[in-house]
Image (tube, rainbow, N blue to C red; front, top):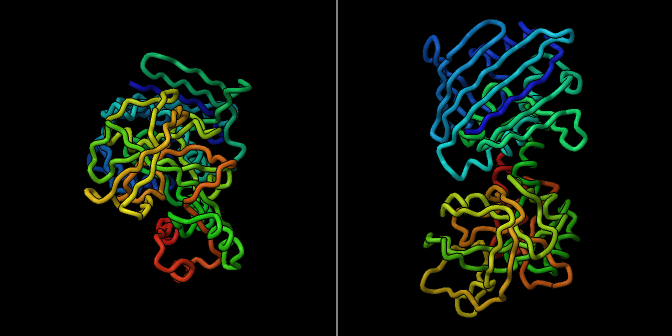
Length: 398
């Protein structure tokens, strides 16, 4: 069981905060859900933008001071309670949430997902209350209990300052698998998309540094970044016959700027001996891996005869071989979400390490941002005819 207790003072009257939080017929101020369906006097259903349903049963309703309900979806069950108290400046809200996740691999990630979504929810709440973005919070106190251990953070503490506001179903949003959607303006919507999916428009997955330098000189291009295709390795736990490998990608600081990594826990690699582990690998094979663990891997190349195969080419059972590679030991320093550039049919789960600038690798993946987005397909086809490439469909569809 994970418990979260959050307090914040808002410069808005208690009655007004109560109306915004509990008016189920008008929850369009929340960007984390698609809609709310009222199913009875004490029951309702929330739907994420991805269509996942969470079911609620109100257990206490004392206007304008206390509201509580039980909640459940396919990933979790829990209880939420909100207490509102009048203050000289407005309203002190105390939100208490208790959640039990159904899947063991989710437990370490609950708190970190909450932190990722709190900023947007706070913005939504303040806009709904008609408050300025910087003046509504007087004090924030957050207590999170996980597996019997309590971590206390206070906004007055120098190194533990957090600034957290939790709304009605912030935890539910994560556990339902939802990603925050559009904000109130087109520009901020695009900002959200680029933060989530990156600002690149087209990616080439078997290139070299000469090709990258050519792209940098193209006046149709705004920016170009790359990561090293370090190689592939096998892991005995992987049983997927279509995705049998680990793929190691060497990022540099510029790569992260255009190809963002959604870090769940830990930190980014500092050198070539450290890696980030993708969360979908852990969930797919039920692997018990944590920050600080080490991996001993023989890193080599995928080959089909004389052809070197890239991450953009699906696995070829019976035809390809993994060349004998260099033995490397990696320390896991973080867990991150599945990267947007890893295709569904990619043969390897992407581990991210730091690029070794002293070594000139033969193969790199290159990502390009264009001035004229509408020309992306013409650009990609014309720049490298016949080459493997992908477009950032999440960004282009907007």
